[in-house]
Image: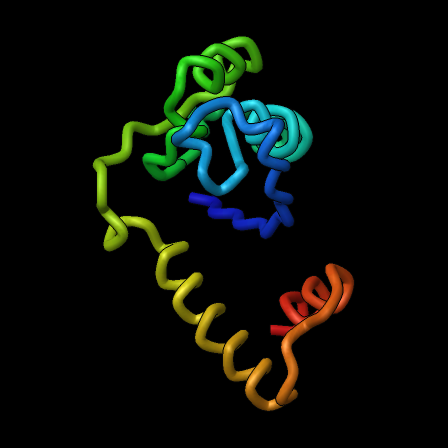
Length: 129
């Protein structure tokens, strides 16, 4: 089994682009489909031989992963999604990686005694960690 994790910088959309009251953080299904699914996940999925090799994606229960809009595009692109139980971080190894990343990131910020002030600085520190 091959497991691949990538970190993508997603920008929150401005309030006037938010499509519902549930879109509190400014990231929605339209952004997920067009900024992640099509640009990054689809090529990675194809590279891994996709459905022909029984490859499936694992996504949490975020509304932008499970909504009709995303499902429609996932089917159109031929991307299989694994059924995943709600609130199951113990089954998802990336949760352990996130814990380590956040701990090390906070430590790096503490050691620098300053938080990143720009997107470039933030990405640089994240890559270093």
